[in-house]
Length: 239
Image (cartoon, rainbow, N blue to C red; front, side, top):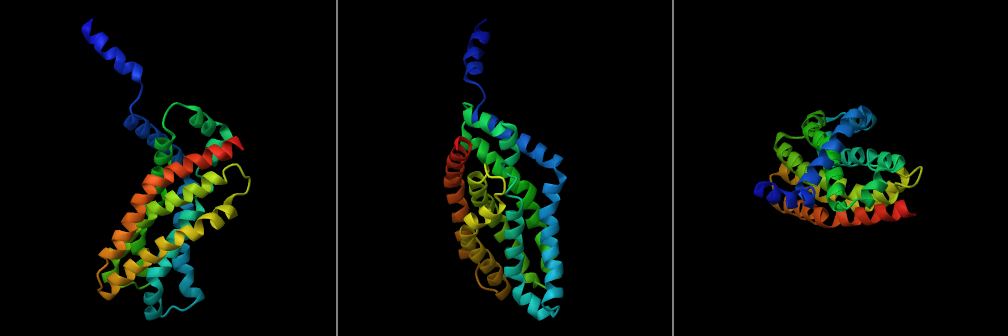
């Protein structure tokens, strides 16, 4: 009897924050795996940029190696942006998003889980695929480490920033163009420091400063972006 009485308050408290986050992340990953097109399209776009750019400009190895750091980063940025429009749209259309806003569970945890799931399905595959694109663009071997590290720190920030734009435009029928206009200016610092880290690695210069700045932007995004996303969702749904 005493054990039952002891466990009763714990049951009444409901799920913990960690439990809510894990459940939301599991749900979002399962939904993402069911939508194969949302998973494959950014990767195909990423690969097409590296394939078509030499055909449209110049296949000369020295020229491509010079442009490779910025080109891979621009391709990763655009591929991430490509999947942003559908981040909250399905939940908005079937009423799940409204239920999440009304639930007693912290909206920040649900939003963080959604952004993390998006990064796992988009940003992480792009990061793992980046060395292949680097080889196709004749990126020197010295730059591969900087490329991987910069994308590993930068792509989560791209997902966090893009989620703010997706939340603001979720109630609009054609919000893809608006998302681009809203978030592209905010993407520029990540692009500059990310490509700069790769260039520094290629030339043999220290890249710790670039990675530190990317890490600082990621930490700032993890703290502030969920608050902005939650506020934007409430505005979009109530409007």
